[in-house]
Amino acid sequence: MSNKQVAVFMGDDASPEVMAPTVALLRAMDLGIDFIEPLVGKAAKAQTGTLFPDEAKAQIDQADATFFGSTSGDSTPVLFYLRWGKQTFANVRPCTFVPGYNSPMANPQGIDFAIIRENLEDLYLGLEGDTRDLAGLNLYSRHARANLADLGPGKYAIKAITERGSERVIRYAFELARKRNKQRKVTVTCKYNMLAVADGLFLEMGKSIAKEYPDIAFDHYIIDDFLCRMITNPNALDVVVMPNLYGDIMSDGAAGLIGGLGLAPSGCYGDDYAYFESAHGTAPDIAGKNIINPTATVLSAAMLLDYLGKDSAGQSLRDGITKVYADPANHTVDQGGSASTSDFFAALEGVLA
Image (cartoon, rainbow, N blue to C red):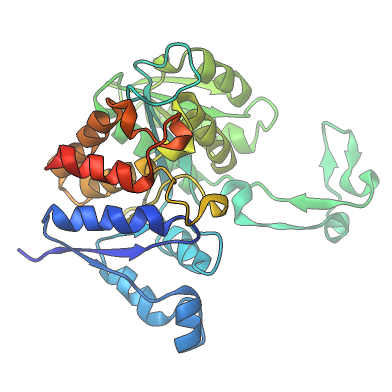
């Protein structure tokens, strides 16, 4: 049987400090995975004249998945290709408390849910411009009781919720609830009271698909009500699915429940491709200090292994994280400890040995 192939992008600023050791850890596990590093960014620009050469794109296409370091710079075109080019429509953001996480909650035990963010449409299509360009459309606001042109100079952004986009991500949520086999419940949330047409479509699609899954419970909340419930009773949640912008915001908030973005893994799934990345940014303020928390990256790697059919290895990584956090000496600065990034990896390698 041939090896699986994973394209790796180390990312920017502090990201390589957690990506490189994580890839080294995966290599040491001898899982039958080949890791390749396509040439992109400044180095690619210098050699080929472009930040994202065709050869790198071909390597992504040939790989079974991508492991992507946080970026804010020259590898951004790669991220856009992984998202829209590969149609990875479901961004899954697990929120699971592990004893030892520095949660601000009084009782975080048992928090274990996943937010699924529709990853390709909504306001993130980038359809923006000057309101003067729309003046001839005679757009009437039923809330402001005025035409757009009457509101004065300004800018616009178009929110687009499609039937196809809603259907596939909501169906993915129901399938994930079955796979998790925990509370077996899907929650849809959006602002369907004020955006009765666009978000209303997302809700109605959820209600329709729920009928096809009688074994999965279904509920729905307006997004502001959901936020309150997520804070006051996170243990009642299982799989939550929402449009893109809400998902971007709520998933970061969910990470805050358990101790911060340094603990937040992420996977973006399409029909035939997926990529995995930690949810945090590049942390330029701590680059080179050897203090960035590797947890989100390691847990993203566990999601990668699950996707590649190496579930036992993925679970080993998650069990390893649990064991590492059982000892406060291994806690990094963001979790109230003093362990360095290198210390954390040494501890993880020790419990996995």
